[in-house]
Image (cartoon, rainbow, N blue to C red; front, side, top):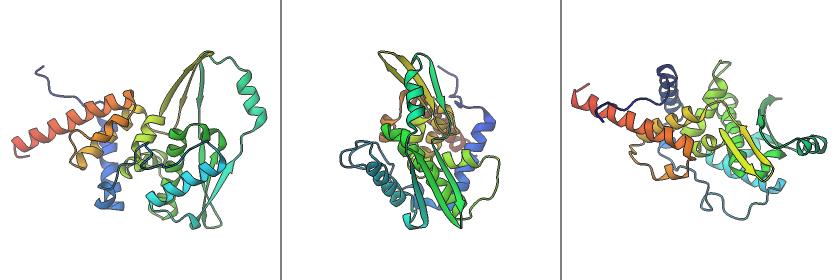
Length: 246
């Protein structure tokens, strides 16, 4: 009862999140920080979604508009699923399967950004948005010359999705558990853990002045637990600093 709230991630990771969000703030400005938080609702993604190539390209266009990327300056490649690979996966026993890896790709080719997304992502809109947001983040960071080669490039790009109001999707897609009659499957996406995404969302919320963000209910239970712990820790620390005039 009397113990002060603890940070949900280790000090080194927390310091990286805080410093990196501060860097993103300097790079992209306060207007982006206080912009809309994108939710997995019809308000932000109107119309029916059937997972077709046309649907995927429409989502890509929506995210370009939100993230400030002119779609004319990037090439979007929709990679059709490999039938042989799909048949192999279907033949494997479902129980205990794990899938992890890059679902999208960003490269520079002839002075242009090229974003590739696998058709396998189309069936999962949450993961699709997370993947496209991450790759468009590369365009904002690398394509616009904001960063060069750095060891934490992928992690910073994941964190950019939080700063740009898309962190709900990437946090929810960080680890997925799917159960069905044949067993269960788990999959991971991205370069930050649920725990780190949860804390990053807490720092993001505090920077926006939100103690109890309404959008938190759209975050999956696991990352939301870390978000909640992170908010308690951050606001308690801020109150102590204010009390002692630090």
